[in-house]
View 1: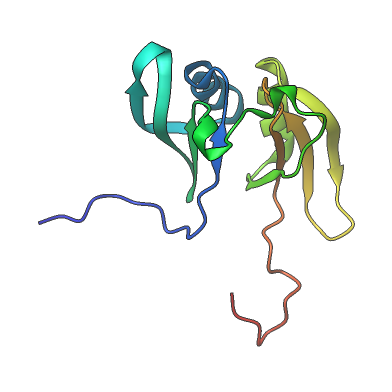
View 2 (view 1 turned 60 degrees about the horizontal axis):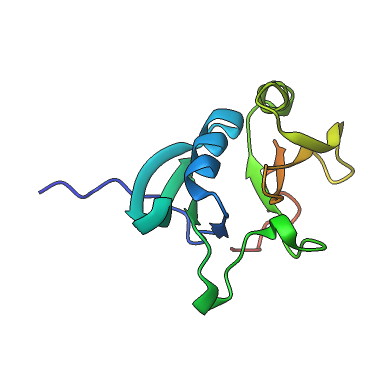
Length: 144
């Protein structure tokens, strides 16, 4: 029996969108995610979904008021941002811009190493795409 494919990541962010079906399609087109699973609900809802990018995964769903899960679209600010490692931030940036991403910080070299940019998706989630992989400064004896 073959084991099903899965992500090696231990952290899987779950994002809420007012229009989750549109958000899933946009995230795939603009940022390069791959749709792996979508569990539809009544009234064009998404109860659960899984989108992969490299070894990472995000889950996307429609609002769940009983869990206090809402889109950031109407909120006055953000409490989180997602960071995604990409091999070429300049190429990724061009693709995102062509798909209509709102760039909030252009591509730049970072003081901690690497290169990247920041963008907002259509409902206001904050994304950082860059080639820096966390852990480079931990030291030889540090373990995740």
